[in-house]
Amino acid sequence: MEDQTWKTSRAWRELDLDALRHNARLLEEKLGADCRLMAVVKADAYGHGAVPVARALAEQGVTAFAVACLAEGAALRRAGVEGTILVLGYTPPEEGAELVRWRLHQAVADEAHAAALSALGLSLPVHLALDTGMHRLGIPWEDREAVRRVCRLPGLRLEGTFSHLCAADSPAAEDRAFTRGQLERFYSTVAWMEAAGISPGAIHIQASYGILQLPPQPCAYGRAGIALYGVASTPPRAEEWRDLRPVLSLRARVAALRTLEAGEGAGYGLAFRCGRTTRLAVVTVGYGDGLFRTLSQNGGQVLLRGRRCPMVGRMCMDQLLVDVTDLPEAAVGDVATLIGSDGGAELSAEEVAARCGTITNELLTRLAGRLPVLETGQKVNSQWS
Ligand SMILES: *Cc1c(COP(=O)(O)O)cnc(C)c1O
Image (tube, rainbow, N blue to C red; front, side):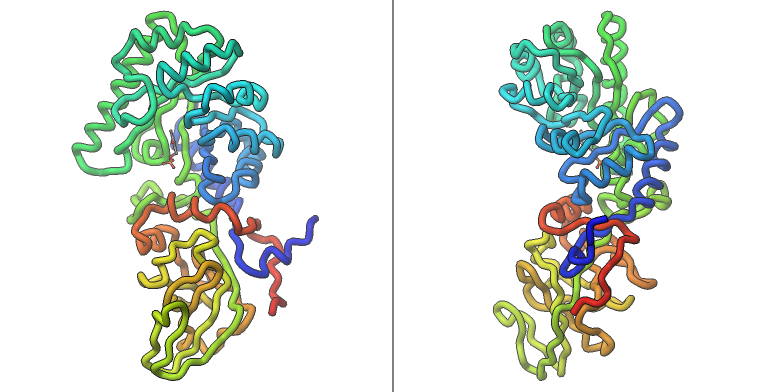
């Protein structure tokens, strides 16, 4: 196997693939007997790495995946991922031939999109998006004539019909009622299609919150993204989320230690000023890796040797400063945890996202890019210095 040790010399994403498989099993159970998991691996699997995530899920029997765009679907195929891959977002009709080449299913954004895809003269597998209230993509559910026209277009093979719930994460009574309304509009359109002799194909409407909050639905798929990665979009974690296990940890290194006299400043703009003799650790991760630059001045913390230590000053592109005055054992080469567990301590993605004023979906997707991906259990070089 490839020597992985260099990957842990600076900063990395660590994937607990056992946790991922556990979450997938749990979601499959929630979906019920006839409904299968469609794993949403868009945006590099929410920053986890689409290829290792899809491969691990495929090994355990997951056969359907969803991505945001053509390029993401093609990347999975190039990596050898089989099964159904649905492109949820808009693909320009000019790129229709690439959809066929990579054997991707395409969501139909609206009637004009459908007509343009049809005009290519290909045999394109599509999923009809129905707008049941979110008003993002889809044909308005009540426009039966538009549904009929789209389903009659030559060159499109209707493999599925779906919609998206836009308030399923909210416990408020009015949002629950809105979700019930979306479900009714969806199933009534599906029933009308069947009565009109149009096979809707595989139907699907739930995303993570819909899977966890609703009873099993009469669908072919549930499309899980964030729940698959073991975190809720926003805290607090509701009861249904308790058994899910976080998949990603974000780790970096202590590159250097500095002692400052009381009154000295550190970092850009000398934004940190110490009121006492202070020992600073320089940690090898920054906003260039996807962290929010504001985190270090909004109470951000890192775990070192199982203890929480505060970030100080302005975060840099590739580094950040941590006050380790109360952790005299801190040493160059120590592994710092930005998201995840270390010893008995944990910095959850939910907690960090809340400090950044965002949802975990955004916190995690921003980690796609520079950081190498390792599986938990792969050798981490402890001799680094
Ligand atoms: C992103 C997305 C999902 C997954 O949503 P989660 O809340 O992360 O589970 C499902 N369906 C569609 C259409 C999406 O765009």
